[in-house]
Length: 491
Image (tube, rainbow, N blue to C red):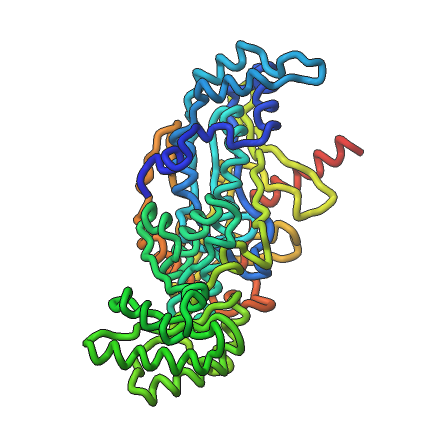
């Protein structure tokens, strides 16, 4: 993706891609003299999507693009001037808007690279810098990372269920708006899809494009065979025929007639597509018909509201499907419409310039955040992932550390591994990009390599084994101490 693509695509500043409360809090920080106090925020999610065992991090390049272009333009400030409070007076002081107009993004950003497998409670992004700046980017970062991570994860699951059969993303018409369509095409390709039907995504991101024709093409002619003939004449070098407009068996027979005609001209019927009915039975029937007609190299493409569960069933039924077209249930993340990622303050410098860890209490243990300046260390044994440790960079960690489940302190694990690495890497330093985003094909390949390192039990779609993610012992003890201190204050 070329730099500046978001601004070029929308033709306007995206700085106000945020919720009002971000700007009202920024105003409060500014009036309180806290705007420039150093803070640390972490973006993470609490539960793996789709009741699965992991997620695939995605969307970072969009986030970098957004942050690089972050600037309050005159039109942004003119709009903010129009906002009034309940008394009818301006919501923001003139001096505050002048401050915003001069603002230059100066936060440092660390993140887990796109295509990396990630897990519950792990920071995908860490933002360090002036409190006001780190606050106002919250909504945009969540918007970008939540959705693309969700779709990339769904794509990887679907491609895993396809058992090596290429999966084409056909979801533009069902996506949530223009940006949903584009972001979904990108994330789906990163997750493993081989192509998209979305031409704009192909143009912008360099994703291979693919497609057939619709039922309306067949219905536009007096007979199905005429429609197939005309399409083969027009697209003889890329002919795929949709065979279920009227009767699928007859559709296969008509496609075979066209296939033979193409073969006599030195061309080839690339494939036939089934979009309805019993896909397992129809694909078996069609495969037999094609093979008997000498068209064994013609592929069978299947679509029709497919997801990973249907694909597993089709595989179990020995369906004869070579290519898959997946749309609605992929781009909408049909069975889980939101990732639920959050962005939480975890450290703030006091007036002495010392870091103070911050903690949000809750009656629900899962909603008590992790304090401190966090990093994720991943441990491997014989090339396989064995555990992830969240640690505080100020506290550090020991060799062969003990980690504790953040939601159940009775669950502990002493790590013994042959190799390890930190996952969060520098993306921006004091507002300047220092990270060269990989090509989209390299990110896609990274997903494939990452998933190979995950135990098969964790990759199950139903009741997956739980991958071990825990807090380094000193971080756990600090968190517990802060919880007890906070509860003592309110008791």
